[in-house]
Image (cartoon, rainbow, N blue to C red):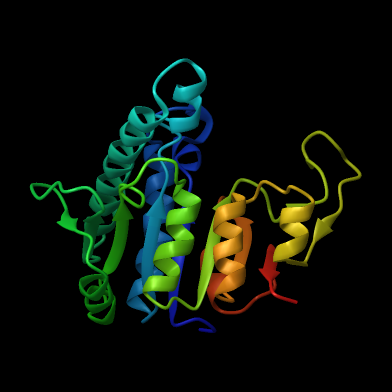
Length: 236
């Protein structure tokens, strides 16, 4: 494998599949199978999961809800998704730990960086929940922060499309896919693959991001093994 330690960023919407809400069990099973195989091959896997399939903080704020309150609701919702992923993985005999930035000791361990690293070294899949523990920060920023804290080799951003395009490939058939793009170009062009805070944090710490399609079976392993799949966001 090209990468020894990875951080996999999953969106809540991806877990919902075509249903648009909740968790699609078929997607969860397929995903857990790939992650289990990866972990059992010796790759250290950390996961950050969003909550767009349950609650989106920004969306709640635009409808009149206090932004901080809405964000806290979103953070709690990520714990639900984390527990669902944990259950799916452990049914495949893959040891996992959910580490939450908000204290929920009945269902998750508190996030402590050294503890997270130790779990990874022992071969456990670590699932980071509850974002950063602070409102006004997205799970993209959480992924960038945690990846740097645990010294991951790369961030794998799992999406519904096979990379980054110069415009929406769903709406425009002539959209051009980038095989590689610099952080600054992502920010300048306003490409919404990750928010600007997350991209800037990765740029400042030289943390590469690979954006790829999670719905094509085997793609996670292909990316980790070094195949040129998706789009690489890097310094240059």
